[in-house]
Image 1 (tube, rainbow, N blue to C red):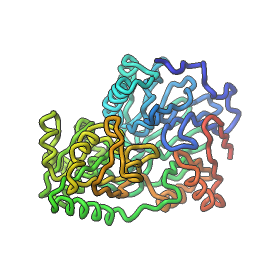
Image 2: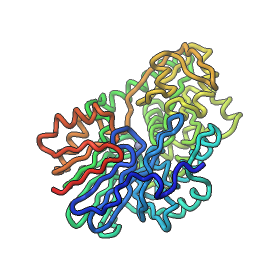
Image 3: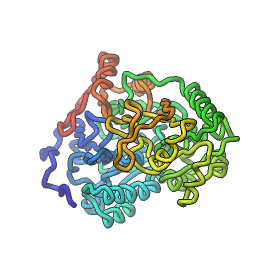
Image 4: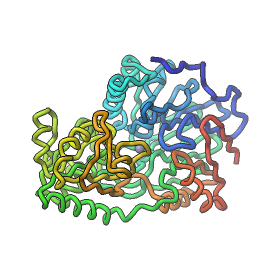
Length: 436
Ligand SMILES: [Zn+2]
């Protein structure tokens, strides 16, 4: 089902840019996820950065993109990449990204397509668009300049997950840095992002106003909770995102408790194989390979039954909205020795949020009470408040746009840094011009 067609519903302004840089958020301006932003200047150069969807029920889509020749995709999470195949309606459109983002995109898009069919939600692109999209990638190493119109661009490590990038853009008048989803801290599978001096910084502010606990201490607290459940004879279920978090958990468990019997199920098993094809994006890929051999991968129904005897099961979906995690939960819920360890943020209306708040969750359509130990750990791969502010200071921009954030997160950064930096709070569909 086609939700919209080019030229029919775009709110993008028809007049050209007089001077300076125009930023127009199609999505992700005043919300978390669902990201897409058009950047344009008076040379007529125009790029789109990211084009995602919010995997809510029903999914939420960004505004329609105006015609473009080039899009830069920061990473392969669905809220940044989910709508990209739709862009193939523009002839000869090119998608720029790292080789890992391009490699993983096929798995993400095929899964999005499958889920939309199963759940009966409309998707505005089809299988043919997906095939064209896979042929439209131009991949770049970090630090390698490439031209888009009158601009020069290059990608830098963003730290959020392997292959994720920030985008540096040099226009004739301004140097722009787009942070993508950002973490300046090292994590098990990737090193943190480094600041880059710029005139205009577009900064994701998901965790503005909120500081993370010390990463090492939080990892130890997680491992202790796992060992406690295993020692009393229970199985630990760890719901985790397929891209990044799941692999982080495996590395932490292998490092701290290699005697455990750990099984890994869901889309992450296929994604991790793509990681090995792009080892330049992985922190210490040899160790990850050891972890991978140690992990028992679930690839059949009988493997899944065997996994019920494991010490730990790491699987999707990370917010308990579907995937094998619910299948396991439905079987593990009858033995109170078992436990569920949640490893990050759980969105409003997600299964994981309901489980944390009410001790109940929808399993195959039935609201089910879960009488198991449920604990939450902050193993986020986004920079926290103090990292965001330090990164912004070190980039030393004149202007800053805060996006991909709840309203209160942007407000805290605004009141802390608004005197030194000219801060803008973009709203979807309303252009921002920056001249200075
Ligand atoms: Zn992300």
